[in-house]
Image 1 (cartoon, rainbow, N blue to C red):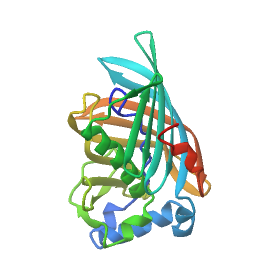
Image 2 (cartoon, rainbow, N blue to C red; image 1 turned 180 degrees about the horizontal axis):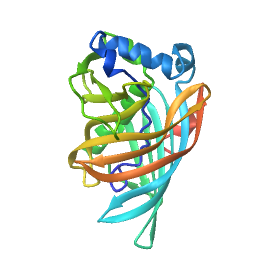
Image 3 (cartoon, helix red, strand yellow; image 1 turned 90 degrees about the vertical axis):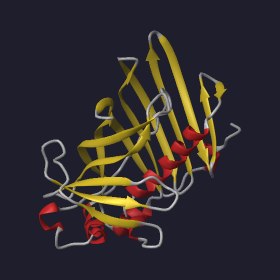
Length: 250
């Protein structure tokens, strides 16, 4: 996230079925998604996770190799780290989110965090919550509706669900019509210059881990242009995480 501000690995997992969705509500679609991604009990078991990734991002018209790690403990703690080699300069960045407070460090030095970036990083934890699926069943926090006639994603027929929640940006979720596997997510995000863009995450490959189906290869576009492609090389679902990992003073 931000030449450095897009380091968060966004793992989303939802599903649906357009061929029958006309006879369903958006909430019923989410209920089917929960079953397809491991079941309610299994998803609730892991409020935390740690994922490692590698891929490339587009910076200054260059394709830059990256490696990173993302850890979250919902609802309000997360840590992202990323390393890259930009024009011969090695850059290492870490971001910590802890109960609304943010710290970012680049090559060992603290970096000022703008209000827009702070909001984006905080929103990344909201995205993780949405990716857990079951929170969407809370009618008091989420408003769900079906998206009419969504376009195909990577050649696949999909059904869309619009997610609204007070204080958060709208999210559009798209699911394979036949398999109920996640295909894409759309939202307003930030580019490396912290300008708002139409951001789309397309899920290309999946794997079942600890009985939970997760996207393991994804592509992100900003305003329709390829921005990042990444592969999740390892995921560990956790029932709890040592809070020291999210210490802002460390």
